[in-house]
Every structure is written in structure tokens, then in C-alpha cells.
Image 1 (tube, rainbow, N blue to C red):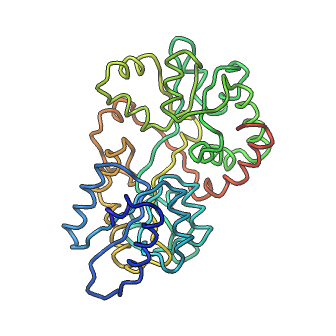
Image 2 (cartoon, helix red, strand yellow):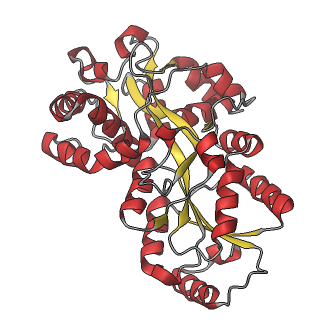
Image 3 (spheres, rainbow, N blue to C red):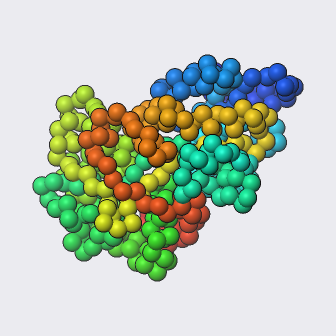
Length: 349
């Protein structure tokens, strides 16, 4: 199925239909994975799983939205067994749309913290985190003091008027952060805060997280939000321009004296109509193992979802340890619809 991912959409749909129609037998040792992760290091991860279990992994890659749309279109005929997505809000959406199934696993219960799992109605969560990333603040060291940006609240302060760069407020990474703020502070304070941040923008939202870091380094703005792995990539870059860039900016893990820094996740779920459920559950449990956790995290400069698992990623070590928030990520995902309404009301594009 890896090869199928390169086919044109119509041919891919036809090929998947044929695959779904094939007879399923107890002797089959296969797992069909739909993944929004596109990292070469994951290849070794999948290979190790096959060596350990004899279960071969077929893979289709797309972005989060494309995977969810495909699952809806395929319905009960879907060949998907495991879904890997890279944002809590999208995982929550898949859960709400009935695309996943609950998984009861003592291994996952023991390994994955409760706040990094989907909703559990008694049959187990419908998804679990496999890696995490923090949403941090970067700033121009020549123009801003660390104390001015050591909390998310301060992004709405009048002192930062005209100084903030950000990608679209409606991007899932920002929606998840804003959903976390909503869970902690309630609707009235959150909407006022969003209005304050929108009023402090140096320009209209555009670009991705790396673009925001570059804009700070170039002096277009003085403050920006980014996921940690974007900053870590620049730290690990062998390009002189990237090294000069990170030398000009600082990074802050917000709210270390309070609730902690917001974290988002990559997460895994068992598809609702999985034809190889036992293999799918085994794969999720495998992803929670120490070796897999290190590979998942290092492959994209992220952090393990399992507490206590150590990585030797030099960029993450250089950025230092931090206190993460404990707001349940499932609640964060659920809050994003309300956040979007707030963004529309305050004119935050």
C-alpha cells in the first residue's frame, strides 16, 4: 500500500476498494496504516515492529484532514486499521465523527498518562498520544525581555502592541493552544485575551511556524508562537544562515510558574472498521514502548508521550526541561469549535 500512496486519487480509491474486498483470514499478518506522519525515521520504526511480530505494515500517507475525509468516504469498506494524526483537535474530530473505536489495554493504561488520551466511556480511550510537542514563545533578544513573554497571558499585554507574528489563528496548532486557555480560564477571559492578541499583531497571520521564527529574526516582529520541533530543526541545522537565525532569537516555555506550557500531540487510533484489530492494538502498544517512543520523538524533534523515557536529541537538551500543563488533551480538542467562534467574533483570522 505504500506504493498506492503515489497513485492519482481516482486510481487510489479504486485500488483501496479492491484491497478492502479481499478476504480476511486468521492467517493474515498485515496492518493497514493511514499516517499523517511523513518522517523517514518512522520507516525504521515500522520495520522493527515487523521484525518483532511478523506483521507487515502497508501505509498510506496524507495530511490529517485528508485522512479523516478518506475514512468518511470509505465507510465500512475502509481497509484502515490504525490512524496516526498529528494534532489533538483532529483526533477529537475523528472521534466525534465515529471514525475510531475504543481500545482497552492495560499496557496503554500503564504507559500513556490519562491527560494524553481520548475520551474513555468505560471501554477504553478512542486514541492515545504517541509523542508530544510544546507550543512556545520565541522573541527578539535585542527588543524584548524574557520577563515580558514568560506567559501566554502577556501576549495580550499593551506592551506588545504591533510586535507579534503568528500563523492563522484557525490553524489546528493555535486552536489547540487557545482551547487549552479556554479550559483553564473560561469563555469571557479567553475571548478578551484573544482580542488582545489580535490587537497586538504586527501583520496579518500568514505562513507556518518556521516563517514566524524567521520573521522575528528579520525584525518584522519581536514575538511569535511556534511548536518546539520547528525551533529544534533550526538548532540542528548545518546551514550557517539557520545558525545565525537562532542566535538572534530566544525561546521561552510559558507559564512555568503557573499551569505549565501547552503541549499538543501526535496520536494513534484504531479505525472503527479495522479488519485486523488485534494487530492494530498490538501496534499501539508497541508505539508506547521505550525504543519506539525514542524513535517517534527523535524523528521529528518531539518529546516522548511516556513519562521517564529519555532521548539524546541535542536540540531538545539545549532547549532544556520544562513543566507541561496537565489539561486533558481530549478537552482541548473539544474546546476548539467554541474557540473558532470566538476568533470570528474578535476578527482573529
